[in-house]
Image 1: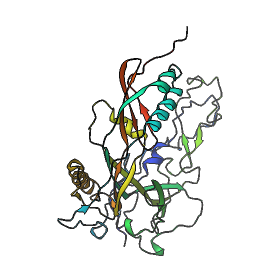
Image 2: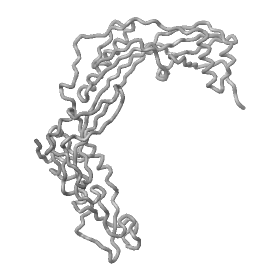
Image 3: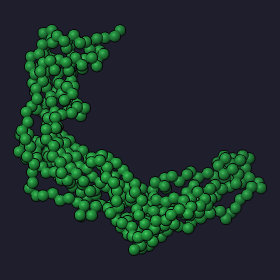
Image 4: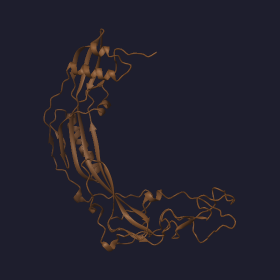
Length: 368
């Protein structure tokens, strides 16, 4: 059933599209109709729009796009005292040839660096460093609704005569590929109705303007906006005088990602890890995942528990959690110590891509 309230329902997106007002002072002998009102208010009056069952939060104000929290049946509940075990893993090593080739590629990308030190340096030690990256992904679906309107020119009106509008979470939509971000806008079935009077032009199909900004009210220059008639076609109803209103449901799928790498090497900037990949030796995927337990790096266990709790509390009250995935990557990191021309120095080889970070390099070229 449909009930009427005094709330105002109007799509904020269409409110933003209201054109600027142009003012016109009619020249002598010009046609001026005082019965044509000036442009109306930016929102319909109270009681103008109907309230549709299940969408009572749509008040039609600026920026109004009320959230539709999922019903309890759509909110997964975690099992108590459940954890996830992780297998052991071996730390990868880098050979001298691999380290030298990586450094040569790095030097070639820096026009100021000479490749001679990279070819002739002598390695002292290659120290592998254990680096784990924990990542938690929570794939959510969020639904919001808002009134929209368009000029009515006799098109089909899918109103309550065809049935009751389904609640927000019962409106069928096609799911995108899992973990893919997407936004889809879906009209709510049977929520449409026609109002026989446009509130922007007061049902006249046109709007009267005041003083012309082109001639400054002197009447000596023909207004290019109203062509000297003193009124424009209403930009909202396009002269149809009637508006077709309906509720538009916005469905947002988003993959929220949080990751963490313990800071184990102060000489290496952790932000460099953002540009490389690791070996995902552990992947756990379910509607809800559970904290990792028994992993050799206790910091990873603690972060897993913290992030899972944070995601559950952050998203379950406003969105539907469709899937979660937690991953542990082993990100290769090797500290290469070497000597060149009797001086000691070092660089890092990191990531599966064998990228190089060198805070210092033995020599550089200068262009005069």
